[in-house]
Image 1 (tube, rainbow over the protein chains, first blue to last red):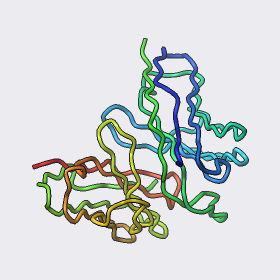
Image 2 (cartoon, rainbow over the protein chains, first blue to last red):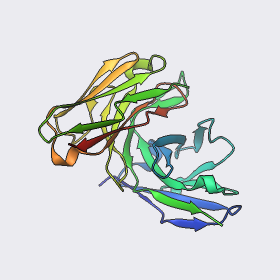
Image 3 (tube, helix red, strand yellow):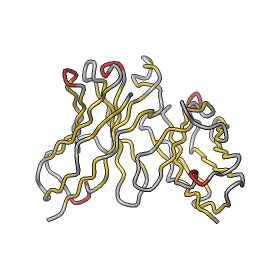
Image 4 (tube, one colour):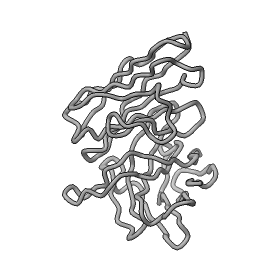
Length: 127
Length: 108
């Protein structure tokens, strides 16, 4: 079974660092881009960025560039989302998802929808 | 950035009725790279439609997508009790990829 399993809920204080994870199984982890999506409480979905675990090539939404770091360790089929200094506004549920489709060399982006989703990691930042 | 505007915000329908959800883009969506997702309360989103009109694996044929350019539609032919949820459209043709704000389909 193809699945993404995310790390558990976190409660942090402003200014602290955090890394959450997303482990893939049941498929070739290095062959599909992984996307990260934020959902703030009671709000909609926001695309944060993507990474290709095969070579750790990454892209970020301008809204999240410089705010988070996306990485991957292909040896353990795991992608990560990292913050150096959390803010209260980072309180949200974060999802990872596989990006299906093909790589468009002209644009430098994969062309695919978010096919398989992790269960989500709830992050609460509060003093 | 392409802004996706979904309408209506809330759709109140009875089981067995037809639901029509709209997604309008602020500029043309490249090659109909548009997807629809369903999200139930407390759950992760689920891919329903990609490429504007292709159903994802395991999605019942009561769900259909159509449209091109700037206007897209998700149709649920006969609502089942499990279809009451929030639906999001997303474009993945132009970076940054963007989502609509969602349409909630609720039981009338």
